[in-house]
Image 1: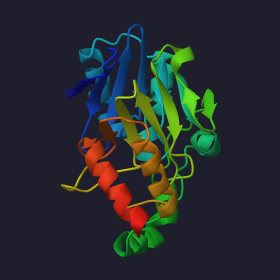
Image 2: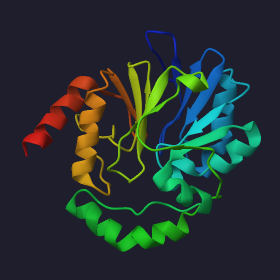
Image 3: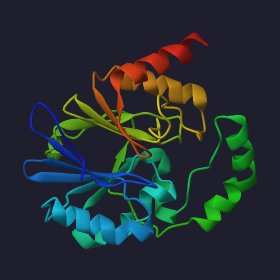
Length: 233
């Protein structure tokens, strides 16, 4: 599995790839999973956790509550006895197993979202679960034993968050994508100007590696370039 390490020794492992990425943070004796992937990938997720040598998981951080990020949250909470961290604006959705509204950022995806938004909410409902820790703005993970913090990066959804580890690595959910070469632009997002502002916040973290939920890692130079381009517009 792909692995990154911060300057102060925190390890980040990619547990799942493909349709939706999931990451494991290991900081000495404390561990956290960021996003859970789809339900049909649960067995692979558990196998990867085992391969990483993680016998216990302390926290699950959800970058947002769309089904492809939260579908295994209820199972993981029951299985590991972990605590779930989510932004307060999406806590009620998680309790109901419902998705934030889908919106497109370009004409084709706006059309798709207009047709499918309500259907997606119902078709892709997932097992509801009650979160344990609600985030509003920036939230330090240090009291939880992890060298990092959660940064509020709305735009894709109202409650989208990123996890910054050791000022070196940021796990960014759908705030940016890593699918098309030379691109970070997400095809879906509720508020594009807000999302671009969140890119600026991520640039300001000083991280060199950005790990999106879809596709491969992106670097600071590319993120800065795209952010400055959109700001000029």
